[in-house]
Figure 1 (cartoon, helix red, strand yellow):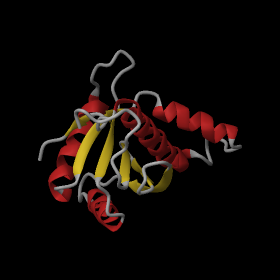
Figure 2 (figure 1 turned 120 degrees about the horizontal axis):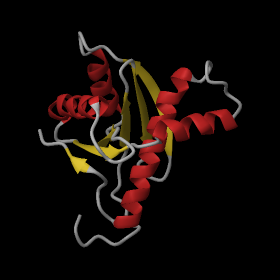
Figure 3 (figure 1 turned 135 degrees about the vertical axis):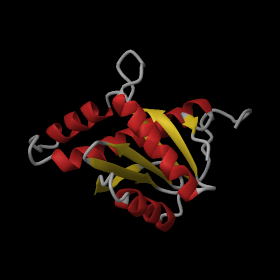
Figure 4 (figure 1 turned 30 degrees about the horizontal axis):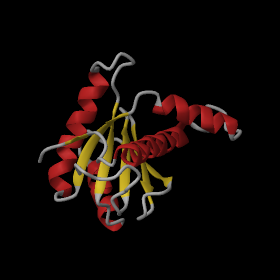
Amino acid sequence: MAGSSVGAMRPGVRVAVDVGSVRVGVAACDAAATMAFPVTVLARDRRTGRDVAELVALIAAREAVEVIVGLPTTLSGGDSMSTQDARDYAARLAPRIAPVSVRLYDERLTTTAAEQQLREAGHDSRSARTLIDAAAAVVLLDDALDAERNTGEAPGEEVST
């Protein structure tokens, strides 16, 4: 979106995905891209890929224009096994939802921020375990939307199909 003015937002629902080894947190925003909210937590199923199929259906039902997949880099910005897992997940998702774009966006510290928000809301770590994944997806989406507002550019890197 070169030449876009700062503060200008592309319209449309975005879905954010926080990929974990056990669960996948999902968040979405309204069509005006003003507010992110938790949607669900999917059980990760590497054998059947049922979580990806459920996510594809959710994206279609919400008529999303873009999907943001969290890219869990190390604090120094490097890659880890989780980084590659998120890239692989995004690569499996992208062709299944095309022409909806999939973008990878740095999610450093989103889970930490989500845990802190849930603690402040009175949830203990045991009761908040599944909430954390969806809350981390909300933090991820809020960060991506803020980045777009601040730069006028789509956030992160696009995953090719």
